[in-house]
Image (tube, rainbow, N blue to C red):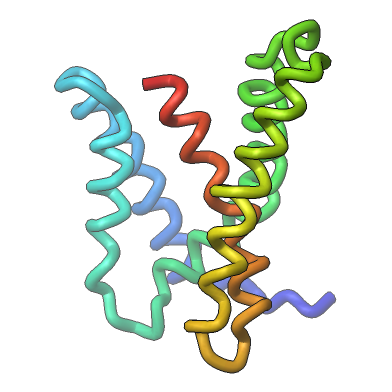
Length: 140
């Protein structure tokens, strides 16, 4: 396969990352939210300037788990939070279409002319990334 081997240094760094993540998130859990600890743990490795080594180690070690967890998270939160009876109505369809075409798609594609050569690639790439904000706004 095309994957490179994991070195002892990579494994040691990943172990330290996990231990720091668990420690910081446990401490900050008692202060309000574990997310502070997750953020602090990530920032603890932000200044290691060895060609983004910590980032590459983290992505390499968590890629498969992250891919599946994202699928499960979105299917369990977004999909199950919407009652099917209210979703399948003309009113919901029209409001969803206006909201989807306007702020979700049109605004991102219209920014494309200002982005240089890869303008439409960037505009369409942004379309699928911003809708999570609607879920966060609804939950707050």
